[in-house]
Image (cartoon, rainbow, N blue to C red):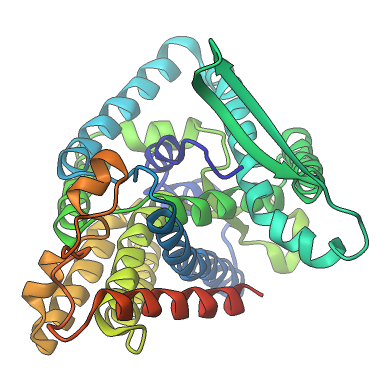
Length: 398
C-alpha cells in the first residue's frame, strides 16, 4: 500500500517550504521566547526524525528491489534537471488557479487528493505496528486485488492481509479527524508519513544526479522567494498537510494553540533523499562498518536547518531554506570524500546499473552496482553489508 505517487507530493511540498517566517511571525500575536523555542525545536525534531528512519528504510527497500529483479524506478539526470522546471510550472499554475477561481474551490480538490494519498502513507507505516501489537491475537489471512485486461495485461496486483485492513481503518479515522477538525496533530501525522514514505521510495541513483537536483532547486527556491510574490501567495493560500506545524502558544493553550510555526515538507524530503543516497553509499562501500557520509550530511542538515530558523527569526521574513540546506548537505559530502580520498568513488557510485533501470534485469556477471568498493571487496561482501544494514534498520524501527 506504499505504492503512491510520491513525486507529486514532493513537488507540491516545495510550495510552502519558505513560508515558515511569513506565516508565523507576520500579523499575529507575538509569541514568548519560551514558546518560540519549543515550537522551533519541535519543527527541527520533526524534520530530522523522518530523515533518519526514512534513510534506513530506503536501504531495506533498495535491497528488496535488487533481490526481486523488478524494474527499478529511479530519478535520472534528465529528471533531476527537469524537476525545478516542472515544480515552477506547478507553482505558477496554482498561483493562477488561486487568483482566478479562489482558494476555497482549489483547496477542496487538493484536500481530497492529499487525504487519499495521506491515508495510504499512514497505512503503510501503521501496518508493521499493528502486526506487532495484535498479530498474535487476531488470525491473519492474505488477500489479493487483481485487475487484468483481456486476461493478459496486468493493471493492478496488490497483496494485503487483515493487519493491513486494520491499519487502513485506523488511517481512515485519522484522515477523517483531519478533514473535520484540521487539527495540527492530524496534519503532522499526515505530513510525517509523507516525508518518511517519500525518503524511503524516492531514490536518487547517483551522487551527480543528487547534485543536479539540489543545485536546480537551490536556484528555484531563491528565485521564487526573493524574486516574486508567487511562493508566498500560494503558501498562504494552500491548505493541505504538506507541512509540519507546531503552536507557538503551546505553553498558554496546549494542543488547542492557534499561532503556528511551520516547516514545509520540501525542506525535509529533498535533502532527505540525498542523505539516504549517502547512507546507501556507505553501506555499499564499507560493508556497513562506517557511516561517515551519512553522519556528516545528517549533522550538516541539522546545523543548516537550525541556521535557517535563526536567520528567519532575526530578519522576521520568509527564507529560502534550501539556500542554506543545499550548501550544507553538498558541502559536507564533498568535504568528507576529499578528506577520505574517495571523491572519485563518490561520483562513480550508482545504486543500480543502467541495464537494471531499463529492464529490471540484474547486471551481467562481472558487473557491480558501482565501481565504488575497494578492489578486494566482492559482490558477496556487498550483499552481506546490505543484509547487516537491513537487520540494524529493523532493530531501530522496533
